[in-house]
Length: 117
Image 1: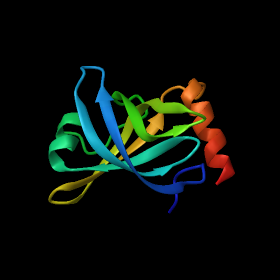
Image 2 (image 1 turned 180 degrees about the horizontal axis):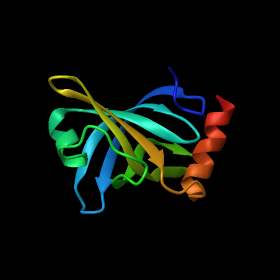
Image 3 (image 1 turned 90 degrees about the vertical axis):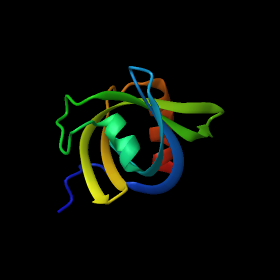
Image 4 (image 1 turned 60 degrees about the vertical axis):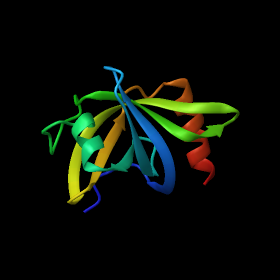
């Protein structure tokens, strides 16, 4: 059953997740929507982003997600909260993110781009 209230746009973009502590890990961005994103990473990266957590809530850990793309000549970096972590295999984890602030300037640009697809 689909739990998102926003349409997902499937992508396969390299990205970088940065915690407030400064820890940075590479991720693959799988989909984007007006409300959040879904990323995939290995077990090591998942342990850094969400240590010992398999399910989080909307007040989850904050991180910045850098998308390896430019929209309107602007690099895209959005603040997000971790919502869930799922282990798919021995070394593959899927992580759900919700945008922390819907009025972030970069997010406004990203949403305009998503609506064109």
